[in-house]
Image 1 (cartoon, one colour):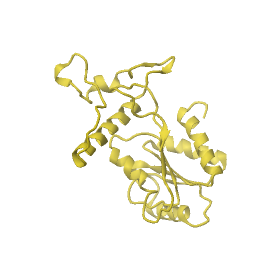
Image 2: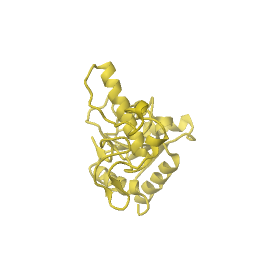
Image 3: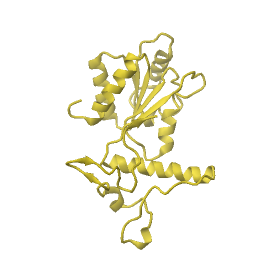
Image 4: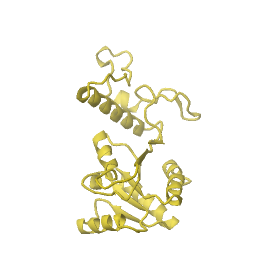
Length: 212
């Protein structure tokens, strides 16, 4: 965990879940990062099962059964958001960790719902880990904007403005897109002092690391 901020955040979370007897789903878009998480789990002696792109369907079925079996000591499932974010029923878990955000909020919602399926009898908590001051923060904010827009259309709700426009560009007021917005330094972020203002590349603070 010394060289990975995400593992430094993930470690105490998993320790808390393990001591409480909870099972956890760990989702991520990067298979390389998920392999590192697997190595971390192995070093801790926590039994897990992977569902990644290279894992054949017959093994996936077996891993799901082992994870959901009553009395199973499989603590975690390490799952690729794209490979295992849909169609699986993993109701033995009551904790979900999203290691990185997806451009499509629907993909992350589908991943969360692997634990929140028919047969689930407990509350399901979801934890998102987003690296502040990086492109991940921009991705998370775009996902927040998409969900806000969807609620406005589908539910008729009044949503607050989440983002600022591109200063000095008259035809880009409120724009979320383009390399200028994508790569600009988060507002109020000082690489040497950390994020004091809570702002991001596109406006007000949305994202960060937290649970719920």
